[in-house]
Image (tube, rainbow, N blue to C red; front, side, top):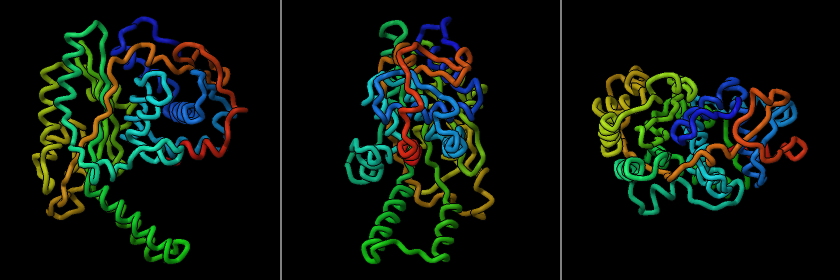
Length: 351
């Protein structure tokens, strides 16, 4: 993956970098992503990561590719935010923690859980329209090449509350029994409950510049949807005008501003924004009843202002001997396999 030299505008450069990230296929992209995460967690000051038969460890590569599926909205959002973040470890960690709350506790960098942010902080749901307006003004009225990147999380509040209640119940059982014991029947009930759970939760990234805006996202709920690299080839991530921005924000406002039960109107707006027909996926399982009876959305936004080409080029790596095909950005040192801990690799993708 040679450096992109023809386009030095951040908006174009980010798009081309994301495309180049998948040039050697989703398998290699997953290994790249794991190696990038590991380097950040280790606090390596260098910006070059060597990916070869030893790094990531070969016996872990299949697991990494399974754990990093590119139809994951969480993974797609985290990758784009990570590429856009400044080359400062704290900023990169914040971009990752936006969708990976487990990262905060696993490496001891603090931060509140989604439950705390949504249910106990008193912080209101974010107004995406306001963030978009500020980013548009900076792009149109600001310096040439100005770009803002917004990570957007659409949170299913009822799901968050259910998961918190489940966590508390497990903690109670641990305290009573000194360790958690579950009978087979109970485990099967939990599996069935999760299998049948319906959620509208999603995340995506908006890149906003003078040229217009793009949406970067993936969707893999229930095995029906699209991968990030597939969305790059279709209308999902194509350049959009400000008029299209008004339509997108209107549909998103319908999604974010509604409460109660899932309706056909919300489903239509969801499909307009995310190219996914929730009713079409789940409708056959509910026999005419409302898909979601406790529809309570909450919006989170992670804002990265004034993204530069240097920010986007902060990473560089080799892929074994395929240097010409596997290089992005500038050479600034190496992270070698002998600096890698298997335990840290496991921790890196457990969150």
